[in-house]
Image (cartoon, rainbow over all chains, first blue to last red; front, side, top):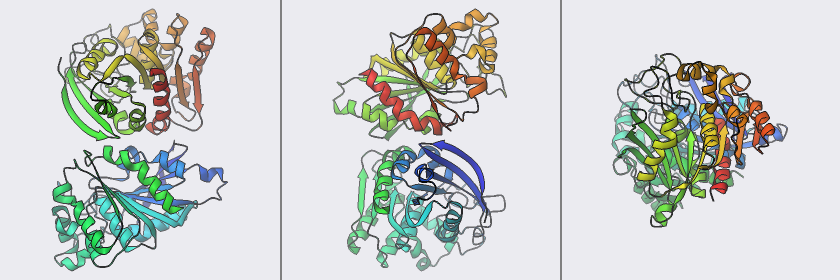
Length: 284
Length: 284
């Protein structure tokens, strides 16, 4: 298990790296970024730091949040490692839906596809639940894999919620900006799930945060921020469905509507430091 | 005098806008970004806020710092308006040096060209010293043009230093990341000045921070951050020349070498909030 260092830059008293490795799950090269605060180095390499995962939205790679996410100052202060994976397999050999921004490359939806021709490469669930954590554990010895949390934006908010709700013992806290909370009920999700997973809607439920909660999934630490000026709120995101599901299930989630904010990284960057600090408190 | 609003996004409790206008100086459309903190709105439009200018480096537009600069949180907290202009005239009718990243479009060097074919459009000095401030004053009534400071990066650090040193009554403080401090003495500057300004090196001095100080320019509030891992430090930036000039002139400048940081926005973003607060103290 080896990784290639694409770049490292000193930033906010830490190291922002970009790395690449051959993924067995996706059958492709995969790129991800990791920010490691200096306090590890200062502790002589002995200190271990918790890990915060950030899953990106449609059309994004690791680069969007790495460049625009404004997370480093807060991570350096709190002593948190920040990992940002890609959103899908990549490469000329990977089947794609050209001219569709919401399906195929850049739109992996954090699931394991069961339908052809997608099933071979589109395995972002297994990649993120198993393979990449093993890579991080092996290559970043300062990472304390016993202390992990997860967050994401839009499609990545869906990813963070579903991965976190399926693995509450692994992730101490879950947060999201503008998440797709009930993909089975909205155009983005119906299109993607129908093609990746097929027509049997029962198979969609493990990839739907609202359905997971309805089916018994629970988590004690949920934080959502949603902009009221978000162009996708009504049709695709439907934040109120998560609020309803949490209320029915007795989950004490914090779901905040932020007046005037849209779907962009300007919104994410505004509340990023708050999310990092909120996770850091729960990561100890 | 009208401007077109390209986009506005709510961000960090303020408004990040991108605007476009027809410039008489450059004879082209020019794009710039402005961040206005909310506290103006809260004060019912009556409060006026100081203005901090940020000049970008080679190859950049307004967008680089707007997306990657991490200035908004600090500007919102301090109540400072942040203006980021483009680095040169743009458009198909503007003469360019194709395949040269360090001359022509994206490389205006904040001067008024005197040589053909550059003299007509390449008038970034007059654009920034006169025209754009008038546009800001007219279109942003909350901007207090009696309280301005200026900063920049690399070629924009050169711009901030030279514009600030020539207009100390207008700019209360000057700061820079990785500035070109003595362009007349380094390859980037010799190439640009020779072609924009001609062979008479005496005409270069008003566009050279070290030469301006040697010729009598003074400023009481100078802050420079320079990364020691900057690939351009030895050949193009030569920070020590500014330190020498300030010492000879009795200028009490703060010139800091930041260990391990490079020339990128990772470096700028790391120290941006500190620069904004430093300017804000001097802007009152």
